[in-house]
Amino acid sequence: MNADQNRSTLPRPLPGQAVAPRLPLPSIRLSERWFAILLVLPAILGIFLVVLFPLLYSLWLSFTDVNLLRTTGPAIELFGVRVPLFRWIGIQNYVRILDDPLYWSSLWRTLYFVGAFVLEATVIGMGMALVLHERFNGRPLMRSLLLIPWSLSRVVVGLLWVGLLDFEFGALNALLAKLGLIHGYIAFFKDGFSALNVLVSVYMWNQAPFATLLFLAGMQSVQEDLYSAAEVDGADYWQRFRHVTLPALRPIVFLVLVLATVNGFLMLDLIYVLTMGGPGHDTTTVSWLGFQTTFTFFKFGPGTAILYTLTALCLLLTFVYQRLLLARFEPEA
Image: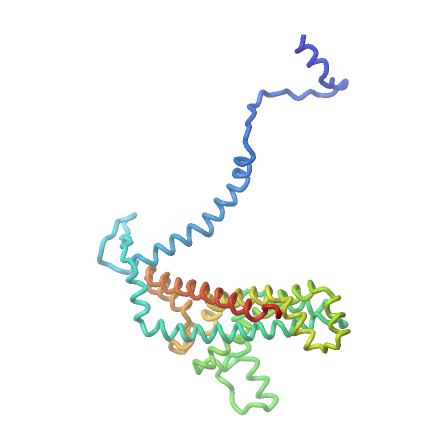
């Protein structure tokens, strides 16, 4: 009787309407906790495969010894090819690279490159953001054109500046000579210090628009009432910038410094296109030294150990930035 009553309450199909068959599907009851775990599980697996596993594998690799070019030592035969086995050696890779004069010269060169790049990118990015924050005709167009250098691939950027700065066929030398500003062509990449500064300038040209974009977004989030109140109190432009804009941009300044520092330490493609670490080793940074050690000499253990020293430096400088910014921007009593 109850079954007949339940069937009588179901909606009846209209004349000529097809009725879909009802399949007996099993009902699965999950708690909210397990349902949430199932939802985030694909993302967790993706992060593990893309980020965590390569990170752990490379960290383990920095404590091992393997060289694909070595003809002696333990190995296995794979499809008729001799493949060397990984051998655990502890911290010997780190001890060896810290005892290498080339590593230390590359490290000082890297610190100079990163310091100059971070300073230029931050100051120029802030200046361009201040200009683009003002109201003037053509401001939307200027904001759009600003993103062109940053949107270009760094390989394309390197090739572009090779065409501009080449000693024999560079457009800049030809233009300066035609204007009578120079009597002989300038070899921008002949001297190591000059080539290193060219790398700093080219990389700043590529990355400063991103800092500008971040600073501009931070400036637009500052309330106009704060500027109006400061103007009523008699504050001029630079006083408003120092006491209103700059404290409000504290998180953006920290973010720009961290991102610029990390990008400066890991910059590799411009060196590959412009200088290949030369002349000699005068533009060899730690990232380029690690790349050469790993993929030119196939020394995977020392190469990853070299690059992990950059990771330690990035973490250390991030901590320093945080402490300095907190002390610098701490509100007055």
